[in-house]
Image 1 (cartoon, rainbow, N blue to C red):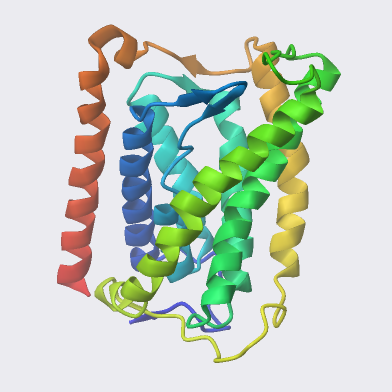
Image 2 (image 1 turned 120 degrees about the vertical axis):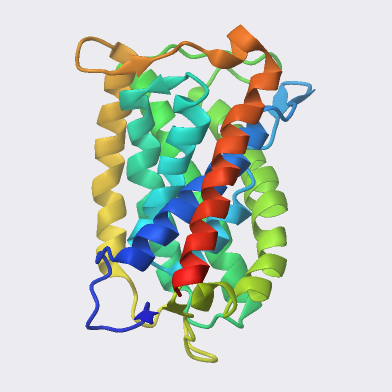
Length: 284
């Protein structure tokens, strides 16, 4: 049985169990991402409110497995099932999530030291999404300031990129971070912890009762975030500029075949998840 907590095992080691986890997280992330594509957005005055994603699903999975590969599977699932299969792939544009989401989720996951502490759990779930949204916000602000993207004014709000992005950040954290992040994660994580990991041949993270979140602070993961942020900005800015260095594939299947086409990425991701789960549990 593979161990997630052993100091002798590299956090970046990729064995059979890690690969199973990677594909499982990727496919389940793809399911939630595809479903949110068809969810409506609501307008209240100058604000557009919508669900950014059922983030409790990928965040809980990363907290359970606590490896960088599990965190990396989150944006890969969004790219494969939420972009490529929908015909909306922008190579450089996808790099922002590919760089930021894994390091932010992994950093937050390593802060959880007491799995039975609901306060810690709430904080790390909120922090995982908040970090990714925070850096994404400043990337959007930076693109306007360097001139690669124009400011899209919203009626009823000051024509300030700081105000616009700040309001969007707050609404996203309320809807995606708390309503579809912290609240369901507080229920789901205790239900799955210690039950799903052994089925994949891995030992659950036991932690230490009453341990501080600052114990064994993940400095390297924090440095990774600080390195990923400027790289993500450069990639996103280059995506806006376009040119030969970018890889774009946009047949736009939803626009061509209608909303019914959304069943394709959902069905594919579900089939992949069920197949991986069956194979993993049979070999565990």
